[in-house]
Length: 113
Length: 114
Image 1 (cartoon, rainbow over the protein chains, first blue to last red):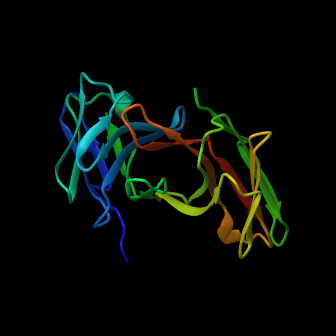
Image 2: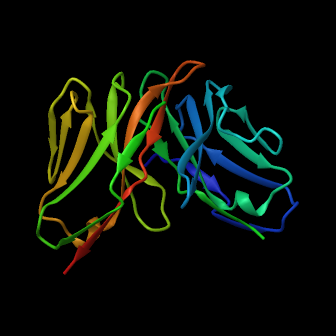
């Protein structure tokens, strides 16, 4: 049963700390998306990778957020330094080039105190 | 820009039909999607419809698409308590760098009462 996995599932940290979230896309998928979900803003696209190359990260605050794909089986989203307003659920999704359908991971619930 | 709108809440009795509505703006969307999110979980792809179709049926789910009015609906027949969740409508839009992204609506919270 292929699925997207994300770690950690929950993270509580203090303001100013670095946070790294990890995502393992479905094997064989070559697109990866990072979303953030909050009550106020709903689901926002932060970054999009195609064949490990970042194609669109216009939704991501550049000063503190960074997203990478060191290899085809791992995508990371890093926040440094974290702020309370970053508290949200962060979802990773993967898919195939040319196919719109995206498959979501269970999310990382981040709380920044 | 792209915008997807949904009503926030819907309450139905168990056994009744539920209809969740959505309006979208990008007429070039190839596919339109319905995702379901249960509490504490990620989004689960429920169904989708190709933009040249008017209707798609999948067991208890019926998707209707009115392309002229940019209106999408999801009908759940014989709604069960297990259908209680947030339902997101999404349209596919083309990214500047190539490829597509999904733009999600605000989500409709469906509550099924006994």
